[in-house]
Image (cartoon, rainbow over all chains, first blue to last red; front, side):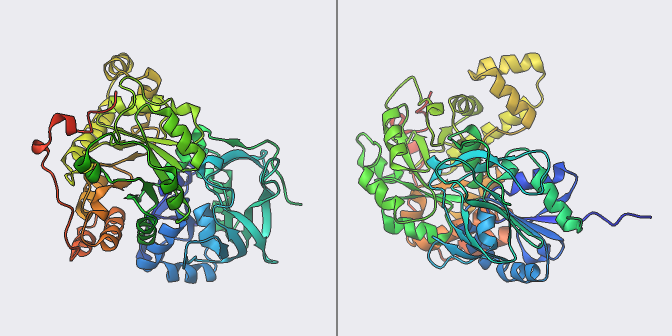
Length: 204
Length: 301
């Protein structure tokens, strides 16, 4: 029996830490390519929306005709994973966005931008992720958003623990869409990327 | 049931600082002196703004001692935009840096554009929660700054001149030396560390990675979309634009054009398109016309 060809995973390459996501994905044997135009988007089976500045990414996505094609693909069931700014892009609703800030949407949630504060309040800490074996992930939060509220189809996968902002939702999944407030691409722990690759393969 | 963390939060770790720098990659950081300019920069798609009282071109013109900006001015910019805000402290002036950190800026530039406060020491950047960016003209300088805790390195270039030749020199030098380190054996790496006056561990790390352990950006003299694309093709992961935008004829249009050229730095047709009808660029200065005392790139040790 022959195995199906491995899926190609795109990483949005408009701004931010695209390179880190490509490195992690390739490190676990996935085929990963940067995506900066609609033509390239057509060739991938899943998309990662990286960390960066969500206003910049949203603007460039609109300017280079990626916003609508991304929405269309996501509505049609393409798996996507957003980290930090990418989580904001996947949110149906945002709070504290820049004036007129647009998102791609897809996950029925309200996300508060820069919710944990400015860079001096950025932090790392352990977060347990539901269904992920091997203990909590070491999560790096950078001017990070949190999920303020979720619709009925959204599964909360992780929340922050002790400290000033305890119990905030920082990891969610809705069908084949995944989002985290934090940056697994910065820590060398590839478990969440593995989960996403499995979602793209249809095995998770 | 949803899960919770087991450990307390830790702020200001190396990963949190360098991670912040990673988020700014593939972008443009713009110098602004008013909240209005900061809004224009944000609307144009800047990934961050640098809040300062005078852009480098005016510091050159007006002379005198250049210092950290007025906290009121920085507050005004911090509250006017939602993107990250950087501010400059003088080389070695750790109290200015303490003040900037207490104001809540997201990144501090320990900058040669301001008048140095210490002629032998840079700021101990490990002592801060906020990340720092420092300028470098060569690999030794870059690695010394990283050893002191810098989370990002930028070329110094020659700020406020609108002349990109020094930034080109610094980018070529840093990138060339990184490549050379990759060819050295163990004994030679010890020698290189000595020559570079940088800790062996950092030198070895760069040799193994084939890049700096922190992002490498470019600054100093970028005035046009083509300049920004040149820096990207020479290996800069992002571009700082100082006087180039708000000293030009149509800042909003130029800001937007430089953002696009930074993204599509390897597509000449895009660069050509965005370079059309930009109006007057800032007036440039030939480096030969600059006295040694007016060269900022030599500041730093």
